[in-house]
Amino acid sequence: MKSLIYLFISLLIPFIVFSQTEEYRRESVLKKGIINKTFTFGKWDEKGNDELNLTYLGIIKSKTTSYKVMTSLWIWGSGRATSRILFYDINNNYIGEYYLTMSYELPKNISNNKLNFSLNDDCKGKTEVSFEKGIPKHLVLNCNKSNYLASSFEKN
Image (cartoon, rainbow, N blue to C red; front, top):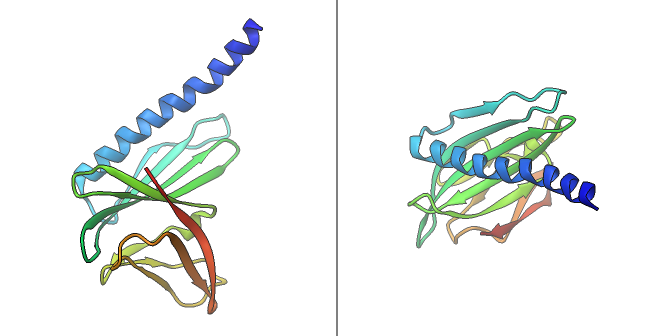
């Protein structure tokens, strides 16, 4: 029983430490406020080291409020990746996120107050998502004139 408890704790501690470290790293990127610059923390390798890429995209405004937007790409384990679009208020308080299954679904930039996506080579054209009415409950992207649900917004 003790060995099972030790195993559980040894698996849980790295997750907790990474979560706290990631939060601090997100905060530091937001404070720098450099638009479209990717900050890389760590270097992924097959030995188990992970890598976190954070890119601050800037501010998107709705009719009633403004949001700071950042992308997160965490590469871990055997080369798996976790991709997110993170939203903060003007005071850098976390609001929520879209969790994406594919890293190529991350937006490239903000222009004309819209998130711009350049999806993989199979998708022609570009996709823009407006936030004029606030953060959409569902992130719907377009690939070859067909819409697909990329993610649902998860609040803090």
